[in-house]
Image (tube, rainbow, N blue to C red; front, side):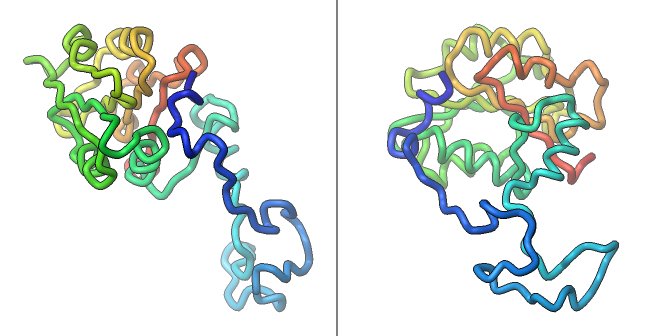
Length: 211
């Protein structure tokens, strides 16, 4: 299902690959113009004259173990903001598709959409800063590709009701992005990574900047 939401021209996209993508270990990698004499500075035995693994396998393995998901379910970006931007660029056609945002919340969702020429649909949280599931579903358009939910929410600080999030995942084919940047400050019951394998339209964001 999720493949059908990807923008048409990106479905057959062939990304750039370097020799480092093919060969992880070698004495000399001529394509990279690296200093073959070794690192001019050594920190904790790290070879600073080498480009890092383009697949971030070591880091992703550690994160997969920490969060209890599989390696192929972990994507690493330069902070959540980059991943928010990439999600919109991957799924939303400019001037055609839209995203939905449960507000008040983190302002970057709307900024990233504006930069990509994508409409933002604001859906107000209730008086307890919780989701009104019916209101959310009624606010969606046929071209709504992503729903951004922040839990714990920024700036209100509360966890969104778990069952409400799951109900939205069940009721829509849109990507449901649950931003859990502040999950380390919340009760463990707020973590919904155990639902990843049940709903293929669920994406969870985390960040090392808070943890």
